[in-house]
Amino acid sequence: MVSQWSFLVCLLALAGATISLDRQALGGDAPPSDPRASFADKARQYFTDEELATGRAYARGRYLLYGARIALTLGLFGLLTLSPLSAKIRDLSVSVAGGRVWLTIGIFGLLLALLYYVVTFPVSLYGSFLREHTFGLSRQTFVAWAWDYAKGALINAVILLPLLILLYTFIRWDPVRWYLPVWVVVVLVMSLLAELSPILFDPLFHTFRPVQNTALVERLRTLTARAGLTVGPILEMDASRKTTKTNAYFTGFGRTRRIVLYDTLLTASAPEEVELVVAHELGHWRRHHIWKGMAISAVSALAALWLIARLLNIAADSGRFGFIHPADPRSLPLLLLLLVALTILTMPIQMAISRSFEREADRESLRLTANPKAFIASEITLARSNLADIDPPRVVVWLLYTHPPVLERIAMAEAFRAEQGQ
Ligand SMILES: [Zn+2]
Image (cartoon, rainbow, N blue to C red; front, side, top):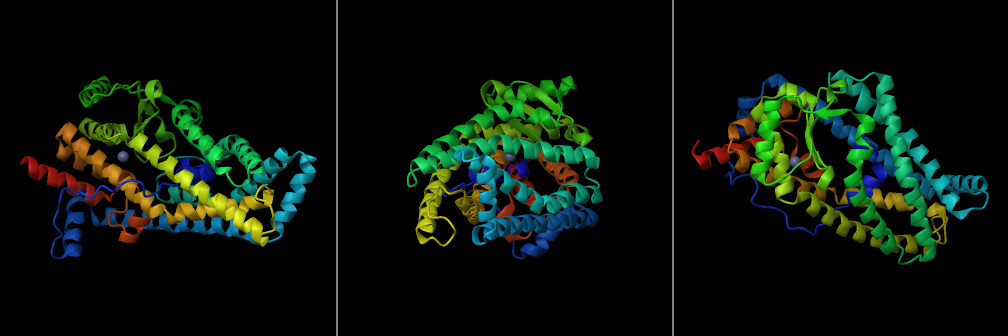
């Protein structure tokens, strides 16, 4: 469902190069003389040949699907930018809106969103339903999946259409400096959603209940206290109704902050592995990754909006794209095209920042628990249940990986173990 927050995510994910990357990474392991050979040994030390092959098959199809989705999105917005089709959609919106300018852009945006969903639906259906069944990861019926998909689309519409109307109101007010008020709104919405989405949206997709295993809760409370964090409820989510994949996350701020564990994680893992997963999340909190991430998003959103405002004005002046004022709804496909293109171009930076945060959280989790053995065990459980690509191509890691590949994470724990003399 998260991946469907496409437009907003594009905006929020525009992370810029404002933070120095964490270079100490991987516990200082020296490059071995023949990296490929030693890599294969290491992979076989922890995974069977079959696990390696399945993970590769599953993940590599996902890379292709991701590429297909990007190509379709760019193709759609590119086509609308360059063809007279968007003039027809605008004329239709004008007549439906009956002369109300704010409603015209709302309807135009809605029609564009419908086109986007029509064009990308086959990829969604195949990638997040059919293929998940092929690999034995999904437990959802088609109706349940379609209902989740529809809810995701509705939530997008409810959040994004008012924002779109506001955006074009600002562009009409000041066609040059609209990016400043829009930026303020984006930052506000981003913070609000971080606070509210666990309460408002998560219950629409899952049911939650307190973790039943009291010994485990006790153990996790001790851990969070040791880390110096007070958390609200420790919840288990009924992920098993939908998937066999395992995961866990922290969500919310202040009073809404909670730990959520997939029930599949609780079934698949020993208590000390669950402890490691939670320690990793605590690591994010201790290193202030949520705030840092939001600050980076805010700065990069400002840069992106400024650039888009400049480019829209240049496009309007050129008159080549069917609009001579940036507030014309016909500028929207170009605006979205620029947004998606900027997001993709900055992906390697965003991913590098994310991976450096993940390494920091991994290191914190090792320090907190001093249990590299359980760290390695939990990495193996996560990799197996999620069919991870054990040996992803470097370029894919660079472009798409929010987390370091599993063997890098295991190597970090091994280095920690060696340091501790365990
Ligand atoms: Zn993490």
